[in-house]
Amino acid sequence: MDLIPSFTVDHTRIVPGIYTSRVDTLGDQKVTTYDVRVTKPNVEPAIDVAAMHSLEHLIATYLRNDPEWKDQVIYWGPMGCLTGFYLILKGNRAPEEIYDLLLNAFRSVEAAEEVPGTSPVNCGTYLMHNLLMAKWHARKFADYLAENAGRPEIFTYPGSERLVTGDGRTFFDS
Image (cartoon, rainbow, N blue to C red):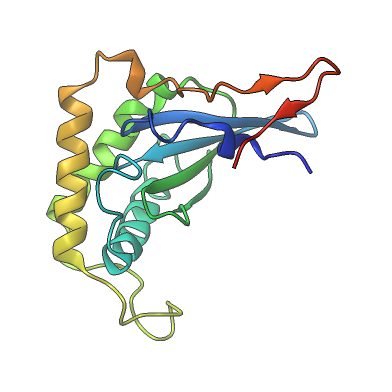
């Protein structure tokens, strides 16, 4: 079975940033999945589940209400490893082209007085939210993005080096 592309990223070298995870063609439309990595995997603690849930609600609401981008947004949701999010947009833009959108989205969390969609009618786990920790993570990531905007490594995946056997098979160690 082939290893999926997101598992070929070297998680020992990736830093927080905005990366193109994959580009798909659906009919005549390009669709791009972005890896929005908020913490450094296996070094920094994972984002608390309740804070992650709140960030999902807050930023999804921001993205789907942004006048310039709302019609381009297909999906915003958390990574299972709790180190970041996936953003799926129509089209195929370089990560640098969505930098301002994401910086503004994370900055918008600071002004939030409540997390949208947190009633039992709107949310499957409506009691599992933490606005204060969501604000802390959002501020930390937004400040990091602002401080590192000129660094190419926050936009380019570090790939894993994989041995290719003589017959063309890729070797994956454990």
